[in-house]
Amino acid sequence: MQSWLLLIALAAAACTPTRRTESPPPPVDPTRMSHERHAQIACVACHKSSAVRPIPDDPKARPGGDDHKPCDDPACHKREFLVAPGLFCRVCHTKVTAAPLDAPLRRYPPLDDAWQSLPPAFSHAAHLDAGRMESRVGFHVGCADCHVRDGDKARPDHATCTRCHAAEAKLPKAPRMEDCAGCHKGKPRLRTRARLLHDDIHFDHARHRTDRKGVAIRCEDCHGRTGKSTRYEDHDPPRVESCVGCHDDGDRTPYDMRMRICETCHRERVSTLTTIAPRNHLPATERPIDHTLAFRRDHAAAAERDATRCARCHTQMSGNARQACNECHITMLPFDHRVTWREIDHGPEAVANRDRCATCHVVEFCTSCHAQRPRSHGFPGSFDQEHGRLARINLRACLTCHVESFCARCHGSTVPRRGGGR
Image (cartoon, rainbow, N blue to C red):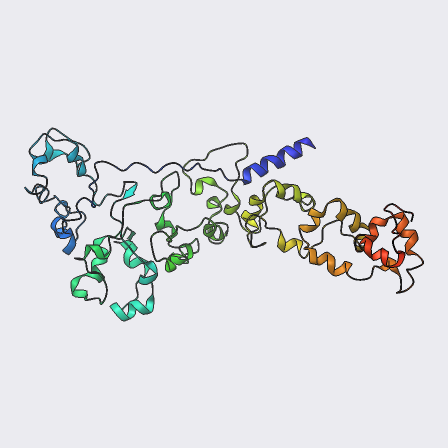
């Protein structure tokens, strides 16, 4: 018996995901150029080539790429270029070398920094509005128009935006490429882990173009909420639950790519005694290992210990995420509510533990029944001869509904004492 209890406890621990302690945001790289400190300078003064004809792979397309112009302008950083190479050089170069011309350049635009220095304001909802885009540019915009380059998935860049926002496109009420502030607004923001796909998760979009049968997998199948996203903050990455439907379908995904197999998505597997796939990695029809036949009877103790664990799966049980019990308990009576419960058992139980009754019933539920004449009172007029004996046995039962002044109407000033006798 103890071994079974141990197995159930271990399974319960495995179903609880590991909590990650929130770490402080990473420090800002001191060598990164501050756009806020350069706000008084027009964008096109530094981004001349990228504003008109962006060529990310061309070294001259980046600011300072034309023999350090315009950064070495007398009104800007000429003094830094006349002294020995130092920290200032790290703004564009990965390291400082004895021969400055041989110093390797940083990637441009930088994607390896935890902070996004000048984030764009972009609305997926506006760009995926077929009617709006049809009336303005004459065609619908799809995911592949911005996120596919040369047949491969790619991050949208200025060249992608130029196709619609170039001056010759003449989009009404839309920012043009020369209008940098039309898209790049706000203060620096922290890139999220999901955006960078750090940690040990690996994902290949190329392998998710079609399923095992060759049926195309649409972007909307995973990024279902993207079409309603109006800003960066509400553009969430796909949920793990969206992967389960395909990865646990043998017709669409090979068995060795099931969600239960950690290596499907994780580069490394942390093996522990209780390692099993989390609940959101499993189909809705699959129950946790401790949900045995006896669990329906014994689940109250588990729910009291950790109601949030129940709420991870039973999300539609009630409006409260921490109390997911309503849907069952309003249609299914507790096990002790037998046929005799109303007439015999519920009174002593209510006296012993009213809080338990209040879990499901409100006060009006009790008064709606107790306002009616009890069956023990018999027919109207017949209880007058019998009530004295019952009152002497248990006066407390009478005082459930009646106050002592009710007795005084007939007994005058001689009111029966509690516990019996006149």
